[in-house]
Image (cartoon, rainbow, N blue to C red; front, side, top):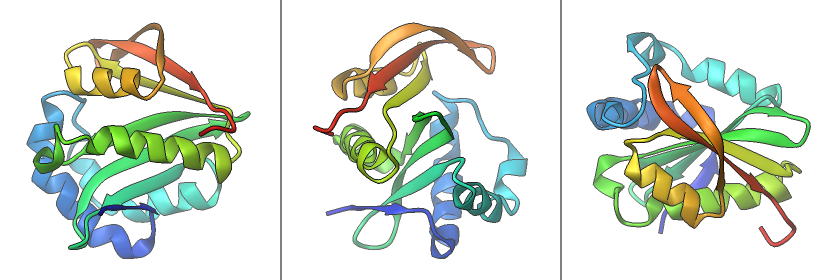
Length: 160
């Protein structure tokens, strides 16, 4: 079974491998992060997390490989933006749905958040389905790197 872990320094190599191995897969449905992302970004993410502005998580397989990322960013006033990426080899197996449910529970219980928002492009059928399956409702439209998308929100309750 996979383990949802808070991002830590020891995840650096596995996370970089995950991003590089799946870069083309991700770029099909989400804006590409560009080459700059891959240069020493890990320490910056940990600093943002330490400051409480973000909560980053990795879904780790028993072999230590990263299967997905589940991030809560722009944390403020009891809210955060959810972002997730799942490895191509894990897509279509419920990994994203399970990860979103698990990070939503953490958001409420560990971080005291009351509401999550998320956005995805119209052509990202997988993310649209995951958001709807995990209790998010559409609240508007958004442009993501010039691509049309939808905005979603989900209240967090004690049941999460």
